[in-house]
Length: 244
Ligand code: IPE
Ligand code: IPE
Ligand code: MG
Image (cartoon, rainbow, N blue to C red):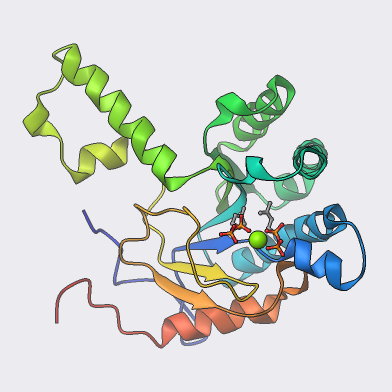
């Protein structure tokens, strides 16, 4: 069910996407270029995340989803995974910067594989920010689009088994209502820095009609101006959603 809105808000003549997804890629290469361990790139990338979320808010973006850790990223060396998890914890100890900005924080992804401590902090951050309404920031942690769709379908299958639903009731709306993103509109624009031109399992359902913006800049080097460039490019696209 494609419900991206053609009527998006505008700012200085630009059409502002309601929901932007960002694949925060290139941290490792950024560190390598400086002969630093990869974890330094992740630390720098976390700073960029805050900066770009605030820039999105200033431009009037309502929802921004940041891909922070994929279901495939467990394949990395343990010390790198541990360093990334530690960064999440540190970040969640310091959500006050988002609190001040009245930004709501939501997490998507399969939390069950994360440490209990991290899960507790995520829940807490969601609870304290649930009424903040200047913008919604969604962090995708242990997120994979395929895993998300499987979890949705599993939930629906349970209901069919319990006779709460019939197989013929299954439609796009029902699948969407059981995704992690159930309260979030479809993504309008996906930005991927670092030169890679793929989705890597990010929002595969929600991006059915998304626009894409690729740039060679590595995520830690990504600036407010780069976000503005992506939005400008989005503004110039003609979105037809299958119509004419
Ligand atoms: C993205 O940067 C961060 C995560 C996937 C956690 P990378 O670590 O993938 O950086 P590159 O792609 O190796 O440069
Ligand atoms: C995608 O980046 C995941 C995140 C940015 C969290 P990857 O670096 O894991 O993607 P691939 O392996 O290049 O496809
Ligand atoms: Mg990468």
